[in-house]
Length: 150
Image (cartoon, rainbow, N blue to C red; front, side, top):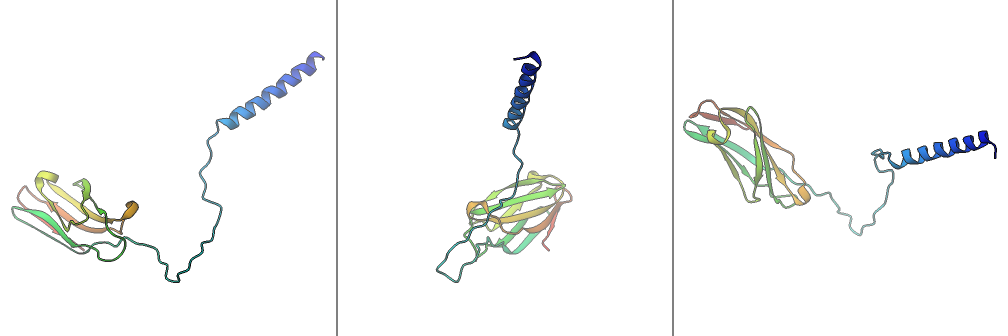
């Protein structure tokens, strides 16, 4: 075999090896599923499950009083496994509550002085959440608090 032919063969082998190695370490791109499937049912009354939000949320506050949000637990939809809440804005905190909870209390010791938006989500099976129910709260001084629910 002549030298130019051998060099050409090595060059082709090297190029193929580079292509194979580049493909082996490439990261696949994320895509949406490109398939469909059908389901068979014997019922004509199928519906999607939903986690219903709390209703009748109110709040109380005042001089030397904490801010207390109170609500009525949802009665329809998927069963609740608990609640998730956040306070965002000038005041921030977050956490979870038990499924039987119907109120949440905030004090200046917990949040400090400032204002924020209280957001409450009912949580159902698998971590599914309801639409948010919101209210506002503020602590003007260490003794005066206020709140509102739209």
